[in-house]
Amino acid sequence: MDPLKNIINTLEELILAIETGGNYNEKQIAFSTAIERAWESYSKGEIDTKVKALPRVMYIYATKELPEEISNGNLKKVLVDLKQFKNTMNYVVEPSYT
Image (cartoon, rainbow, N blue to C red; front, side, top):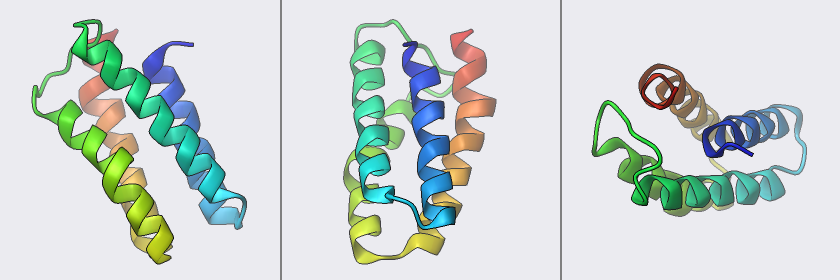
């Protein structure tokens, strides 16, 4: 699957799981894994963005900060952050990739 589409799919699944009380821990792992795979593609020059520092910030958030926030149980903040992440994907990353 396309790395960016995989990010969006796993991100939407994670948001839904948090909103409905589903298995958000499992969905968080899938989302973080999708980010790691996209980071590999970005590192190889296969993905470009409008803001060069953005992929690293997104990678750090998804692989370090997000798991900590979820384990701390701060799900309201996580939802806000994830929705911002999705907007960033839609308006900054995705247009540069297509």
